Image (cartoon, rainbow, N blue to C red; front, side, top):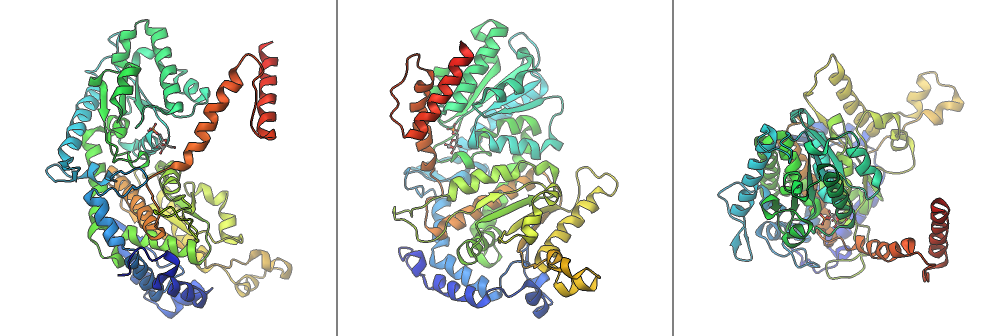
Length: 548
Ligand code: F6P
């Protein structure tokens, strides 16, 4: 193994990959498949209930060998062990990174600062279960004695995207006698629309915030408190209608939520890695404690696979390495995630924070400017909707966009032949993207000469096809963990800190400075650039006109 301090671009495997990418160049997938009739069977992995067909990637066995060498030379094994062991691998915040401990089975041990955290994790899960059962059964009553019918999660980023994605993904298993809503945006519209038809006496707010200081969340939480107490008249009503999920007990109690109604987690859980902590309380209320435990079991199954499977057969490692291949050697700038399941409609949005807040970094762990690309842009929409929207560009545009297509063998809502139609599109899109249609094939269809170039599909567009049996809580846990560890693999190769997010700070600070400038009665002494000054003046002028 080469020491990880060798800069990435100087590692032997990196140089070999550079040379190899030039040699492999544009060798079409058509040829790779023609040369090896077993390719489709060979370049596929079935593991822990997921199957990944990665044969339609622009890789050969040599590419894969070199990528695995790159992982070894980047000490991926050592980094995985360090993460699972609880080393403080989030160096800029001096924190352990232990979302894997959130799904460690009862009775196991993960030691942080000399203490086994697994019993504590399960103690919180048990309290969550008691609370979730009380809401689901109706034994927990609102202040006026009415049953809780509406659960509103207030949070943003990781304190929102995980809960809302999981709620949508697992709606099939959700208690339909309860309404779930999610408020994240500081735009008052979000709160107003989420509550306009609800009775405060039947509404529970879960305020989720790791820090309990986030502007958007605290603003929405205060608005919620006013909305509730304006109707129920007594401050005491808060105890029955507010619970908090946070690491910050002091701020939670200051806000007025009793410690007894607080569910904790720990600084070693990153916001975007927290949907399986108490941040998942709304998920647990929706699908019940046993469903939530299935979700955790799914996460854990992938953790174990990631920790133990050889890199050549390791799903997240392969997916991460393929991303590095496309980003650093074939010039891809984005990755599309295309779930062929309506329940996964928020999955791409969830992945955007997971992937881009993690790997959108321009310096290495040592603080040196990287001289290679890091995190790609992740985006997507559920198929088949995307096909009638942006797939045109993927098929015939000028950019290389590797795609992950996600499908299920069985539908949760088997209606007529819908599922066969849906899945036929998964397979057809992967086929069309890979093999395209040549000019000769287009001509053979009798196409007018002038139209031939327009109807050619160059193909050679790579895809991963990821299949599972059915979308269950366990499978959702597996899918999320798969991307978590793929992100980790990428970040390890790039030598960056995938667990901090300093890039969100500057905007927050500047907004904090601008708020009083928008609200002051007298003309503020603006000291920004001329554009920002002018924008603020225009806004203030319009505000003045509205209030006059
Ligand atoms: O966007 C920055 C961020 O810190 C995310 O990492 C986090 O998920 C989100 O804000 C919300 O933070 P909190 O849970 O502390 O309110």
